[in-house]
Length: 357
Ligand code: AMP
Ligand code: MG
Image (cartoon, rainbow, N blue to C red):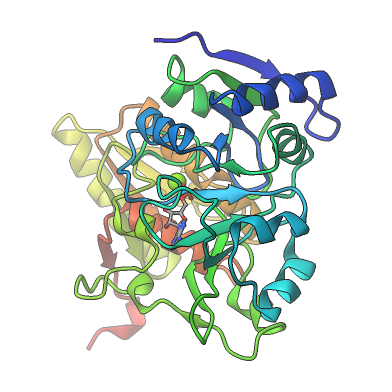
């Protein structure tokens, strides 16, 4: 065990002395967790093989699951990306800094330890003053996966990072709650047609405004094991709470009645059911531990509270979790992708009163 230093910063105007010291830790091969606009990241020097190895070890992450290199200015891209197509320049102009990660062929400067053995590299510029200050102070190239133990929900608060990594890393920079709450959109630009490998806050429609064509990795959507997702990280069971989770699809009242009956049944046998609901539906349940993720009219609230709510169910030691579905207009794909993974793709569909055959 090492001692993990926890330091609070003002997320808008982080103390330059703190950021300088944190950057120094990374330059000398150490690990620092830091806030971004998506989730908290666990940063090490992306150009050092030994730093990436340390990240895998601290997270308990399989070493074939590549890391994203975070940069603070677009011109720094060219040291790690061997080819940068015009589309990437256009996307960087529109979405950087922001929740978009792009995949390029890597240069020889990027160690295979950082890319999980791949010849490609993932790069992003985060939209967060503390993250950008840290990247600059660290020398420009911070490899950072989400700062959780592998398999647990990603951290949206510094306390989540401490829960998972205290004693395993040098420092945690506490910048309060993150803004978006889901990991970045990943687009592969190494193929002729750009492909979305992971949905995020930058939706397919937003990308379409800049790209002639953009496909979605077919391995992402289905439960079909013969088409594994192309982003290595999407293959692992991920984002998961400790209790088994089931998504219940259907009309609000029917879903509530169905889940209510299951929760009541669970309580009879000494179990405790957690229910992931929304402000609009929470009042429909009469059994179980009911948690609202936010209002259905604010998809950004739903995205922001998803991981935190899953962690809260863990703390309350529920033995099973039932969740409503959240097919919201813009971020629905990203939200449902994470929820489906947390559920191991267990989905129950409750028939509407109207659609009995
Ligand atoms: P995390 O930072 O924890 O969200 O994980 C980063 C994810 O980015 C990995 O799990 C991969 O799914 C994806 N990724 C990173 N580098 C590559 C790459 N070179 N090719 C495809 N996917 C990648
Ligand atoms: Mg992760």
